[in-house]
Image 1 (cartoon, rainbow, N blue to C red):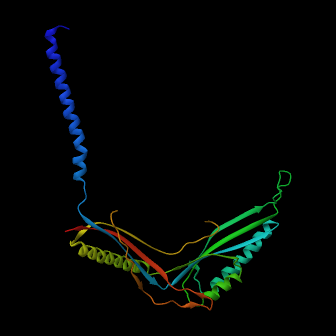
Image 2: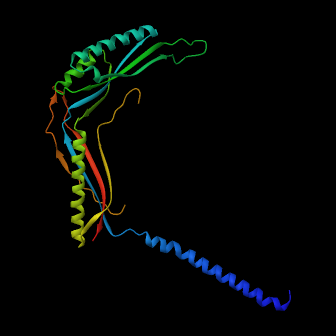
Image 3: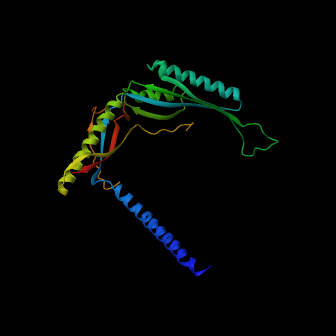
Length: 259
């Protein structure tokens, strides 16, 4: 390379380095400016919750009939006999046919623990059937359960107390939860010397019901609970079973802008 070409080469390298430096500075400052543009406005975040107590007006039951015998035929015959007796009792108790459904059937052989390839005969057979029913007659429910167990039913898998007015009570609980959140936000705003503005974000969660078992298987937040009795106390079924009330609850997470 001769001496006359050196200044030109140095100028090219100098321009390239300056261009690269400018590009790096621009890339380094972009995330900062972008992040600043994404900062949420000042707000108050609160949680409001409520609970409505309701007397149930319907009951769902999952019932089981199980029989065992050395022969599959006899185990099935006994199961059919028990099931027929149970269905007859359910019908005589005023439960409508449309509210009764058979939803599980199984026939399983059971073997000795010493089972081997040379002795593969089952010790006995197990036949299981489950039926689900809807009961709308709440009074005398204790006697109804006793009648089931003395008329073929061998297992009460699940008892679920419900209300036919669930949507109404859910809407009521949700409105109470929102009001609780607003009151809590106003109280916080007064303490801070600011004013609650419009809603910035809201999420809602509501639920009701009970569990079951059977053969087949954000910034600062404050909670406030509100309870309301929507139906008085329900009747006690019999002398030993008090049905009581079921809970319909709602919870809301709300963020309000600060004015």
